[in-house]
Image 1 (cartoon, helix red, strand yellow):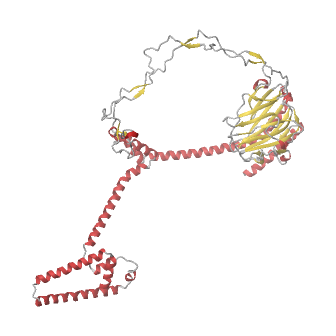
Image 2 (cartoon, helix red, strand yellow; image 1 turned 90 degrees about the vertical axis):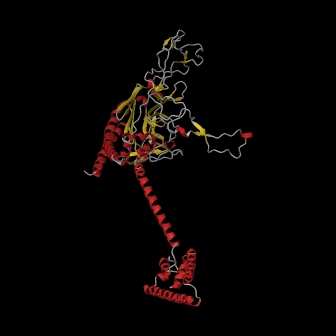
Image 3 (cartoon, one colour; image 1 turned 90 degrees about the horizontal axis):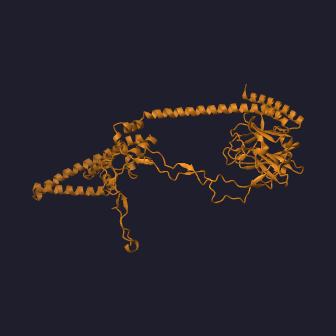
Length: 606
């Protein structure tokens, strides 16, 4: 069966059941509201400016039903419905409704007020001080457990004033996201019972369970009677003659006799020494500031083992017996407990029929303020007479119970799914931890915990703790040093190549062909780089021819010089070498002034 079809069938069954119960309630004159179509013709929102929140009737999520919902958080809500006729609590009263917290329950009220009957009351004028007869239902703010209110607004038969009588020990509400029923039954004999989902949570006599009580006590403590200053009401006192036994050991900690002074401990070294790096401030004045002394710093010699007087560390005393206290004896001055005198209570009265003095009920109101959103109300039932409790039971079992079972099954399934998901995640984390246990960080920690590196552990405790928190740090520590050395080696090699290249260029004689070959390309050279190889070859050949002609001419001139001037060949060779040196110096100057000069000369030579 498809879920939509199932919900449709549930809706039809629920609607038919609700119709039958509504017919029964109408026949008996009971009030029942299930929030079907037309509900807003009976319920009226308060027109007071305080009540900005407006209730909405929405489909129940996961079930074929309609419900009244608080749509927004941090709002005051006021909604009232008048009863078909006034209800007299002294004849017995049954009140029941559902509530749930779809979006959580942190702070807010989900109680109802049974307003005191007043012909002049208009539902749209509801406010927080509108007179009520009974207030009933869950409330939570400040107290994490919350409480189920039961408050009667009782009229003093002597002076006609009203006062609130609260249930002294209220039960706690359920705070999950499921719908729950809250039932109040009051009988004509002044007894009450509070049910939650049909189970009794509190019951008793209204004459005894309320605070302050409906009937004030006959006597009250005399406010003028005070305890005498010399009154002794301590039945026992410490024995003044008792003394602590000689073998009583009340030392919590004792020196550890098994401890030994660390090797290298410096007994005569001070813990602090003057800071030698400190300098006297330039603005310091001995006359105004006193004699300047250098600040002290921890003695660096104490880092290894310690300095000063060595004392044994303390440990828990195995013979500790606790703090000794003298035994107690009877107090000879004891006069007994002091009791304040009682006087007649001027406000005492006995109300034989207190339920007749709380007023008739004329309307049901939801007047609340809530921090949360998503509070839901449904299936309100108010009836006169204790016998109407049977109808309340039918409503609970036929309208609430099926809905609760469906929603609870869905919630349990969702919870089981989330639990399975959480368990799977936990197993995944466990597997990762086990895998990490076989990894480098685990191996490294094991070496320091019980392996060959254990002697070094005391000096590396902070680092090892950090590795436990961040296991990937172990990979950085292991791979880091070799990587730094490798980078350093590469940098040194590159620097060495750079120096060698620079030295080679400075010691090289100028060669036009080499200069052209090593020339750095620029915007003015781009055209030359695109020339045809044939043109370059032709230029090189021309240069070679000119060089050959210069050599032949030089040789002829040398021979002529020998012949004409009669100089020795050695002198001619010396002059030739001198000319070559001058040419080299000129080349070096061009090279130092930049590649442009070399390139220009290279082009001219070409």
